[in-house]
Length: 465
Image (cartoon, rainbow, N blue to C red; front, top):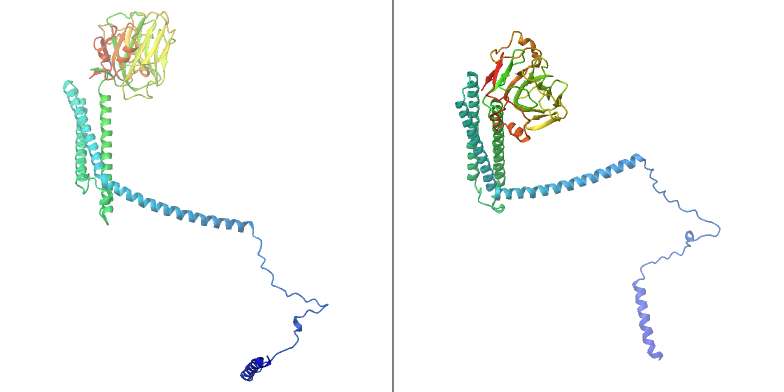
């Protein structure tokens, strides 16, 4: 067995010799010094190595906190604004695209509808102007007018001709605008948004639509001006012509004690009931303006129909017995005709006032049981206060008759359709009399009948057509 291990030992020994020979030139220094600095000696506690102190920040004040909050809020606001701006840009872009597609598809048909409606309005306006002009011409030819009225008619006719010419001009402009709408490329053909031309086509379409809108605005403004002018002409015609089919009126040019109209009825005025109606257009209204007055020597105030500022008053048997209504007349006068009626019955003393066909006041117990005496004098536009009655053969009355009149009580303006009945009219009858376009002047009273009973103007009062 020794013989078996001997070769192995020789082999190991030779390997060691080879290694020694290979590393023999290098010196390996080994330091076996004591590492005393790593040892901890009993009894000596080493001092710890000082470490740098942490950075202690100063305490924030309330202003620093406030500025920080403001900066944060401003940053958030900027972010929100930027987000909203982006959303709006995107939405506006999509909306613009939708509008351009809508204009391309329906612009022609909508423009045609607008132009057709405008043309129809112009034709209707022209036809109404023609009818108004023809009616005015027929009325002017059928009535004999004075020189001043003829001048006014010529001015009115000239104004109507100008309005008619303006209407024709607007119709021509509408026709041109309509033709331009139809002649534009793609108008009324129902093109969709996918057929829009590329590049500047959308801008051209938008410019065309804007120009059409401007033209339509101009036409609309011109039509509105024409409408205003037509309303002025109709208003002036209503002021000039008489209401309810009346063919003449009494003119009281100013307030004067000499200007009045005396009425001479053919039947006595011994009445227990009555209804008085008239159309008036006062130029001025004072605290007391007399429209209708009947009285005698004993009592000059048996019947009085008065205006007082904006009110209407009716007295029977004296000023102690009256009924009044406020807000009937405009302050200072009016430019339109007003229909007024006063009714009274002695049986129950029921007195009522009517304005424009509507009952505005009623009062019971007014002069109940009273009978109006005969033999008095009846005036329009003034009151008689202590003078002698007029006789049929003496139009100017007795000497000194004007001394009984007060100029402050005189009526100034126009009056027509004065009628008086010996009964109280029904509500339906009073409503029919108050229609401006009706024929109330043809329904005459049995005591005083307009156009039949003798009425004598005095001073500057006169009948006009």
